[in-house]
Image (cartoon, rainbow, N blue to C red; front, side, top):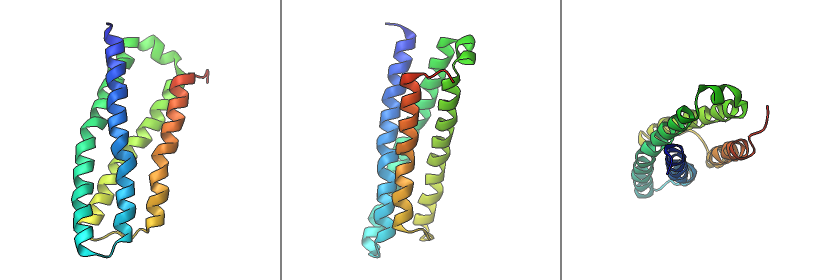
Length: 144
């Protein structure tokens, strides 16, 4: 078994685990923005915090194994793989999205949320669209 394939497999595994949380967390934000019940809000605060802190190591490991995969392919391959440069740009957007989730978490924690459930419904769709573009880039590897 090659090191490259091991890195790729772990990259994909941790990416899937990360996205399970990234897809679910904004859905919790939707419910939180809709509730006016104190007990429900308290429960959602706990769920949101635990989920975000649970998936953050997966986000880090996704990056680690992605970088190891790129390193294994080599500098010359990286230089000529323009599709990967676009993919990495989208990946950076996902990490910014993930970081913004911490800000939203803090807003809910301190009862400062001013955004509607509709905002969070749209916010929930953003990583889906970015992931779709990333998958197409990674699978099709277009000559850009």
